[in-house]
Image 1 (tube, rainbow, N blue to C red):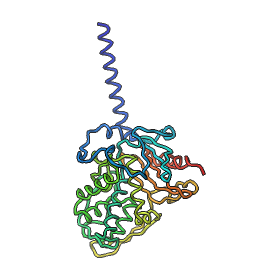
Image 2 (cartoon, rainbow, N blue to C red; image 1 turned 45 degrees about the horizontal axis):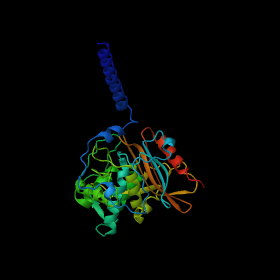
Image 3 (tube, one colour; image 1 turned 120 degrees about the horizontal axis):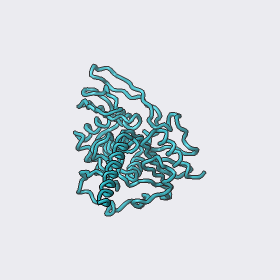
Image 4 (tube, one colour; image 1 turned 180 degrees about the horizontal axis):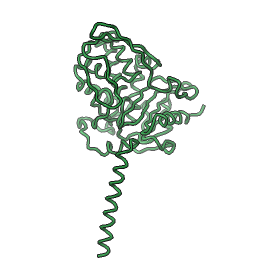
Length: 329
C-alpha cells in the first residue's frame, strides 16, 4: 500500500515537473527549437536520404552528431566554422539539427533568381510589374508601398532582397519567375536537393516561420557555398548601402535608401583582422532567433561561419567573432 502511494506521488511529481518545464519553454523565446525537431513534418518522400547522395568532394563532410568546440558556444542553438580551402573543421554544434532558417532562406531565393538571369530567361534590367499586393501579417514585418501595379527592376528587387532582407521582394520575384510562389518553392527545393542539402524543405521564399519550412546549419553551409559561386551575388554582398527606385500607381518614381542588415558592415561590430566578407545573409524570426551565415576569406583561404542565438544579436555577433578567432594569424 505504501509502495503504491509512493509510486503515485512520484508520477504526480513528474507530471507537475513536465508541466512546469512546458510553461518555461513556452514563455522563453530562447528555446524555439525542440518543438520543431519533435514535430512530424510532411517531408517530400521522393527525396533520397543524405547517405545515398554522392556529395561533392570539395565539401567538408561532418558526421551526424559530430561536435567540436561546442562548449565555447553555450548560448547558441547551432554554430559551424569551416576552413573550406582545406576542408578543416574548427567548430560544430548541432549542425545537422533541423531548424527554422529565417531569412537565410533568401540565399536560395537569390540563387534561383540569378540562375534565371544566367540562363537568359530574365535580366537584371527587366522591369517587373507587380501583380499581387502581398499581405505578410507577421511580427516585425513592415508593410510595403511596392504593391500591385508598381513597376520595379529585377536588379532592385534582388538587391533589396539580399541587403535589406525585404520579404515582399522575395514574393514578387517568386511570382515573376515561376508564376506563383508554390512553383518557385518547388524550384528552391529541387536546387537544395541537387547540391546535397537534403535536410532542407522550403515552403516560402522569404523565411518566415512555417512548420514545414526548415533547414540545418550544414545545409546552409552548402547553400551559401553555392551562392558564392555566382558572381552577381558576390557583387551584391559588397554593398553596405543601396538606393532602389520604383514607379508607384500614380506614375511617380519613388526612391528608397537601405542599409545592410549585417552589423559587420555598418560599424556596430568590428570584423576580426584580415577577414573579408564575400557572401552573407542575416535572419531573425521568433522561431529561429537571430542567425547569420557568412562566406569569408582570410589570407588567401576561404571560411564559412554560421550561427544562431535564441536570445539576442549581441550573443550572435559575439559567437561569430569567437568563431572567426579560432583561426590564428
